[in-house]
Length: 245
Image 1: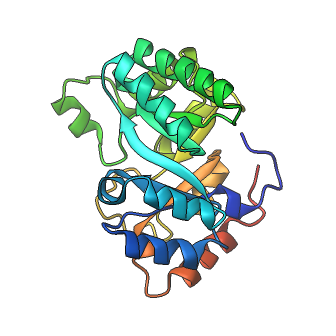
Image 2: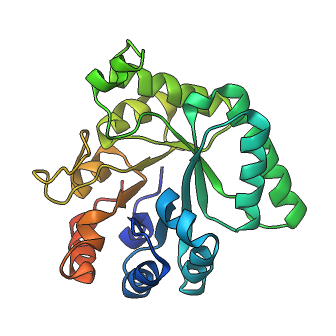
């Protein structure tokens, strides 16, 4: 887990959930002083490709490439190598892809970084999407509780050599207790006002997530759709001050 005193800016990941390069570029330029990391997901990356990553880097930001790789082991491993070449700070894959897929991705990523003599990305496993609740996971054949399934997948990820997980803030405590302080936890489903949940079902405020043990928090719509994104980001950073534990 991150050490006490880390700048809240470096723990805030802003999700660039927009559909075009112009809006993404504007948001990066507006918010680069208030967030250290920008998340690029499927929608934006499909529209812009690597160009948006270059813009983030030129503005001094780090990239969380949120493409949630999930395929046969060789395909995911090679995708991980491409992420290394793009110099992303972190990328993710689905834990439900299994041990072999995750292990091969870790091995290939490390090898490519060594070959290029550059830092390797943090590799994260997605446990269960924050849009899912217990009713949803039962509909797809998972009969355990959300907590039990998240913990099972987190343990499998660590065994495969993955650095950490993307998990709802409501599962942070159980992950931290079972997997230790060095296992990275990135938490989406963060809402400054808990009554505004959008399509997220397992949410917390920034303060609650940090106190629960989150290393990084991901916030999208509450910032990028705000009347004043900068003021929204400032408010979130203020909420996080003094809470690094």
